Length: 95
Image (cartoon, rainbow, N blue to C red; front, side, top):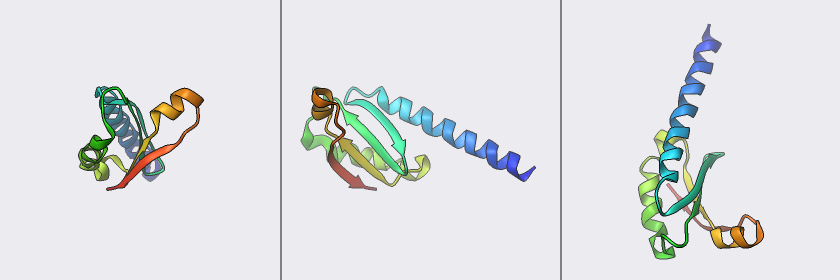
């Protein structure tokens, strides 16, 4: 029975995380996002956010870090990815 409760809690937590990530994907400044291994991976939309705004966006995203199960935000270089398909970290912020 204990395992059933643990499994149910795991499903609820994953559902909440997925819902939150889906909501931030709707922001015009974010092209894609996912939580992997305790890190929020963000592909910003370069046409809707400047590099000078990354820190402010990271602060807003970090305000939900503990509830969503991540402790770092990594902004990926969307332009490099679109041009070459390579994943390159542009900047990272600890929450």
